[in-house]
Image 1 (cartoon, rainbow, N blue to C red):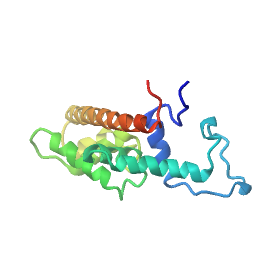
Image 2: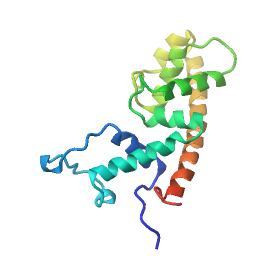
Image 3: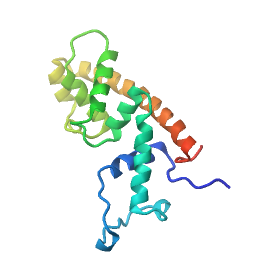
Image 4: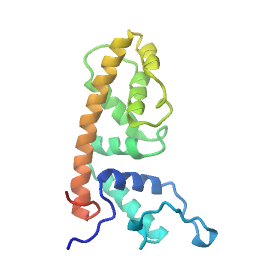
Amino acid sequence: MNEPTLFRYVDHALRFAFEQEHRVIMNQTHGMVSPRRSTRFSGLSPHDLHAQAAMIRQRVQSFPHLERHYLQAHFGYDLERHEGMEVVVNWVIAQQPTGVYVRRAFRMMIEQYIGRGRFADSGIGHVRKLLKCRKQTALDVRKHVWLQLDTLRARAVEVAEGSFKALGLVEAN
């Protein structure tokens, strides 16, 4: 029988690793044990969980440049200080057809795609105002950006999945 893995999916492993980065290890006598903790982690101490998360984040550092920065931007928490977001913004702008583009508009569209960040809740109206165009044009640009981000996400998850399966962190399908 196969040895049990900690995670079923790559997304779970990455989300766990980047959440643990900012989680403080508390003494269990203070009652800080999370009631939602999965049974998958029942045999691991908080120190073991942090070590697993550090191992995953270290493995992400060995990924190719663009994929690494995408995963840091998508799963990391400090979007303002993370260079990952800037690399992704630069890549998205470089993929656009010729024209004049506003960097802030592309960052806004990326944060909308990711679902968090300062501009995550802004709508297409804000993008339209920044691009100084019609609503339909803004929708077309956002659709193009999101399709590019879909392909980048697929590449990054494929790289992570291969790496994590080799480590035995995720289940083989």
